Amino acid sequence: MKVMGTHNYYHAAVVGLGIGVDVEAIGSTIEKLRLPLHRMQIVCNDNHGITWVNDSKATNFDATYAGLMGLKGRKSCYVHCAIRQRSQ
Image (cartoon, rainbow, N blue to C red; front, side):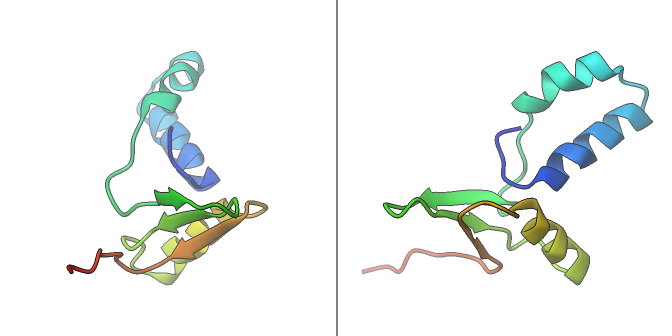
C-alpha cells in the first residue's frame, strides 16, 4: 500500500481475512492498494526530510489518533485540514 500509516496495513489485512482471503494473497496484493484522497495522503517531501501528510478525512478523535500513531517514529508533519493552493 503506497500510503502512510501502519494502521492502514492492519485494516486492509483484517478486512481481507474477514472475507476469507488467504494470507499469501493479502501479502502479495496489499502493496498495490491505494487510499482515497485526504486519507493519510502524502502532500510533499520537503528539503528537510519532512513528509507532509494530509489526513483531513479523519473526522473524529479515534481516526486522528490512529493517523498520528501510524506516523510514530517518522519525521513527518500531520495536517488535519484541507490544503489548498492559493490562487494568484
